Length: 635
Image 1 (tube, helix red, strand yellow):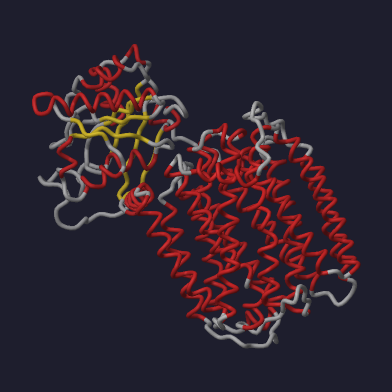
Image 2 (spheres, rainbow, N blue to C red):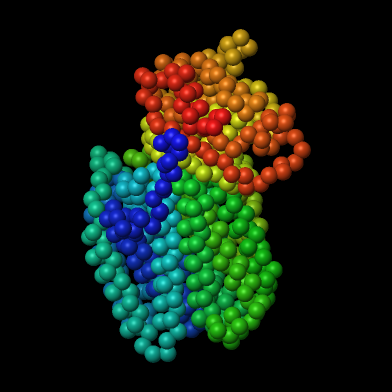
């Protein structure tokens, strides 16, 4: 048995990051900030919704929506400016200043509570929004500086789940304080001041995070910089569409979260504790979905999960309406009375799964933006993302206010949002087919096969390299691409592109067609040019040196193409072997592949990776021997 077969790659669990100084202080700082925001926001929203607080001539229904708009307005106004500051200055020091400012904002909040001044409290909401505006670009710009690329999904998942756990705890604490019959001002002021002080002290432990663009000249004009930021976002199509997807989720989420108090009271006949329960269930769902992402994605940035999340967001929003379309109720039930009625479990189920699929939807999108953006511009890209998020959230508030003013019920508002989500998903996924191709790949390799991977850590994390593998079936490329943590560019026989099922798919994923010189010299030359260009850009290229699918299950001779590739662009080569695919529906064991109906599901296969071979030691005969040994042909 070879060395690689004795080595099953052990991926560090994402929770291991919580033991490391490069991540834990930042994680706690972010969580405490979210906790404090939600203690205050939820207490204020519940006091508005259930205690009849009014301001600016608005009744409680519209004031709750207006409060949500006030909180996110600074994102729209100031994101472009603070994105520049995040790239220009060292990030840990900036975070400490932000946390000091939070203490001052919470002092102002305490004064507003003591004076019972709604205008002052709404001003505090605006300042909290401004604080979050400043923190956002720093947060998402800091993670890629301290985490490896294969830790991004796990790190983002922990940040998202930790944030929503903090939202859950803040929701419970804020709701419990708002429901007190005693001195609400004392307890709420004590809570928000204590948490803000804790957040500052934790932030002092965040390690130094170097400036990525110290030479940057700040443009203080928010309007011209906002325009330039939005224009810059379009330079990378996939990143821009990912940001549109994120912004749409904030539209979707804002519609639901802003209406929870009113939905609880007028549609579910629930008291304040039921509103807290609903928010808690949603937050737990987001946390579960975020953590699931790392498991489902196998440690890579798996955008194939995004369509799954989008489907779930629509299905459960529509079912939430069907579960309870009522309106015009009066708040009479406590949380215990609410869950004692069996029909309400369907509502809680729908809300939980909206949260779960929301986590599955957003984590890969944020990780994609961090992975594919220029690190020197990442904070400004995140700032551009925040601008669009804010715009979408402002529009969501106006959207909700318009529909509610036309006497649409809150359940109907949820239904319409779920239907619009389908249209948005169709638009994004048709503009960026990569989302759908990755979705199909993920579904395929997780439904037909159980895959054991050996020694994937041999593949370099950043530099260019060539993967060589035996060619057993039409899905070899999908399996290799699905389990390698880097994006892989495949080289394939041009005839495969003419096949009715897999051909169009391989065109979508950007595979490189190649032909023998005797059949099409120009296509062969073009293929070698494309391979060289990809390797020069530090991409991973995979070829099947046999040049065709095996017809008998045995390993064929390797062609000279691999030697030409390495002579032109000297990069290391990693031998690989796929085991267990011979005899599958996609192989040629019984003649033609992909005929009839697949008879086996969850078949056991292995992807075995050998040790890296330096460019100067590469030749086709040695590589064939390596792949032969990895597979164990004839053993």
